[in-house]
Length: 250
Image (cartoon, rainbow, N blue to C red):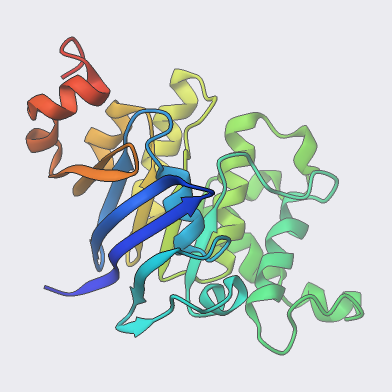
């Protein structure tokens, strides 16, 4: 089995409180893998460990066969492990095109955050930026300032800026958080499209989204792995139903 990401005995302690407790995780290359669990289960802490915003207390993180436990966040991002945050993280007073273009600029090792580059040089990235905006259904809104976009469109823009970094593995933290039913459906279909040729690891509370998207699901409770399998397996697991879903939702 080809795994793009693995954790081995991953632990994170905060002054005596164990937020992540010996988590072993294996994410298959090319899959959509969901991380679910009740509030306080440790999902976001695991994400922070994987993207190196936190250092583990113990354990190892292996990405593409390399131990990245001690690598910094910029290093793992350059290697193709890119995170999209729970709250939309675009630049509000830049246009959609400018947001994506900045992502493309950051993806180029020699050009990363070289804000002194000329406007003409940046305009060379426009065609690629427009292609990415088209992929998320925003081509016609390229010149709209991000703050003026509806919430669902802002999330789509965030996916476009994430794609601009050319991720091999996308970590999505609550991609449908705060959305209405119509937007949830649109974002779910969008995620199916942008996941083509990539691996996705996501935290998601909406179980309909998880059921529709995820090839495999890991359930956390109190920082530890409670169960793992496909949706049919975890949704009928009595421990999962008790800890997270409740009988009515399972």
